Length: 310
Ligand code: ADP
Image (tube, rainbow, N blue to C red):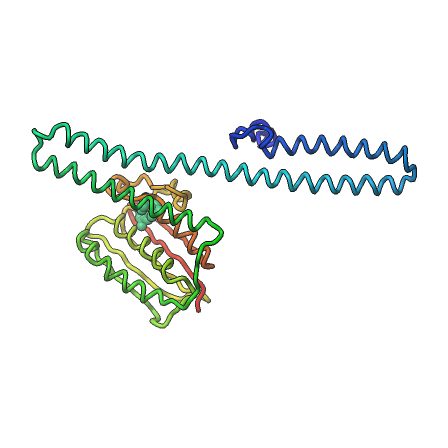
């Protein structure tokens, strides 16, 4: 708490020089303002003499300087915050891309250097690593492009009448083989087939697909994934329930953060970028809805979002 009042330590957080640091500039502008007001006061007393006009003049100058102070430090604060976010983003992205790239390089080195003594199984194993990691890099780049698009001010979102059930039926068809291969029962329940929301069909489908994909991905064989579509008040809900690995309680606060992947037992077995839920939250909020979840480790999770009814 006290640390936030110290301009030097606040400036270190942004990693910029003091003259670009909002907290330091705030202190400097404050000192300049006090000096300027004192000088104007004495000049006005000497030249004008009338105490009412002097007070008015000092008040006007003080008000003007305060507004300038606020505008300048505010815009510097936004610039410093953007620069900090940019460097954090570059750090995370380079780290996320480096890991699969290292795996690919290591596998290729192995395949090239021990060409003569490899068994067919060994070759297959290393080719699989290369394939999985190049898919992971491709997914990561696609997701990063989506994040950049969402964060830009001109994110294109249409609002048309959409049947969440219609999309869900399509997704069930698309995912039925994935579920079958993982020995997971996939079910869908809809109370009212006529329910419609106002949303962008492409983006809402992306969110629905991500929640379903996660539910299947993070459920062990023999499990169940249930999709429900229903109305409550003036909202339509899309809910995906699984009885999979769940999310540890202490990690639940971070689940919608960029690149967050829970440390549950499935992290290593499943490919992922940790961007899907972050993108889902941003998209649903931009469409005027809400997204939430509840989860218990080793018991399962329910993810749901709601959108205003048409
Ligand atoms: P990922 O590409 O890793 O799946 P997401 O942003 O979609 O990224 O999800 C972030 C993390 O949240 C996942 O890595 C996983 O640990 C956890 N998670 C998401 N959905 C579920 C679920 N249905 N059950 C258990 N864990 C989940």
